[in-house]
Length: 273
Image (cartoon, rainbow, N blue to C red; front, side, top):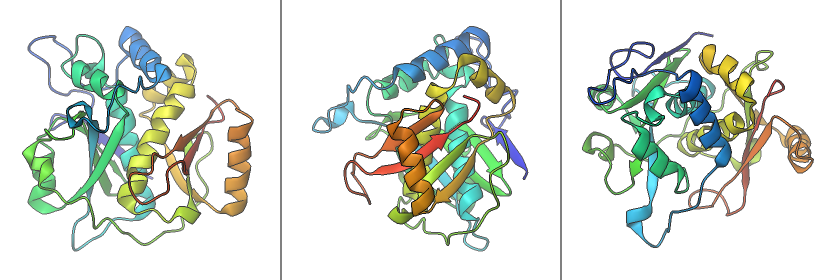
């Protein structure tokens, strides 16, 4: 498997430098990563009021779905999960960074994510909007700096939310030692819905990790596997959630789209957390 990531056009390790703060884009270290870990562990403060649109925040995710050469479902979801993770540990989201205020405001809301699709010129234009692009086995996704749901960048607002259906594939077993985000196969979620769910799952898993484990994982580029779980495996995973096993995190969906409120959509695991 070939994984690659870039933070904006300049690349993940040498991204743009803020003229105001001097913060260089890319995974944070030291106190920046300390803050990222602590903030994820604190979770959402629930400040969003769905009845008041001015309080609603979202993280846009764009999936590259070229018309002539559709990506495979699993690596595309892995790219989406990893892109979300890399935004959440980017030095620019830490205090003093240019992404800090919008990112913190999003975490204070409901950490909502909305996935859209793009191809051709639309995909190229999306690369100029602040965020992180990840490529896994030729499949690409980009996660963006969160913001008000009604004030999304026009280059993203014009992209369609629907039309993200892809045939299920049959990947090999996850690589040993890699965090895995398991999707409930029975829910039959669209790729767009699943992308939002695995993005939330990886955030909860990062909160479960020890600071040492997070630093190691970030240092290796935040590799993550995504797999679908049949009924037997899902039952075992759900039992691990009920036992509050370390290194296990579950996403309970609010039920705005596709699934019923309270559905357990993904369970993220990391044996080394």
